[in-house]
Length: 140
Image 1 (cartoon, helix red, strand yellow):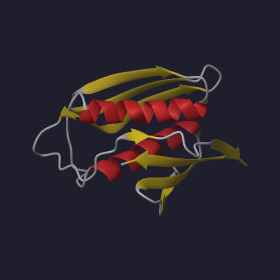
Image 2 (image 1 turned 180 degrees about the horizontal axis):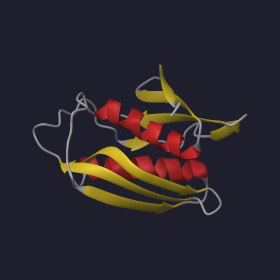
Image 3 (image 1 turned 135 degrees about the vertical axis):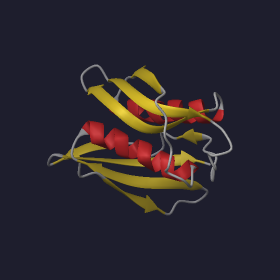
């Protein structure tokens, strides 16, 4: 997997540029940047998994809705998703299925930032010569 991300300085928000070899890798990398934005640790284990299914009107909306769902699970449902086990994206129907490992939010999860929302501002997914690119901004 050749995905990567780069932090971008942004006034009052957190922003990243992401690059990946596939759409699925782009979504996984987007999850990773959300993850490193909200917690300090990366050492979580659990056999519990949760399925997330989303349909949207575009790939950009699908990505934002996916990250907002993970964010909602953490801050509202107190369910911390920490890894992607399986991901499937249908580019034609703009639908997503993802199976994620999770733990209930507890004292072992040290939150460093509360993300209010993943924004639609400047969101665009591009496929340039086989590389998928996106810019993500988190409202904090």
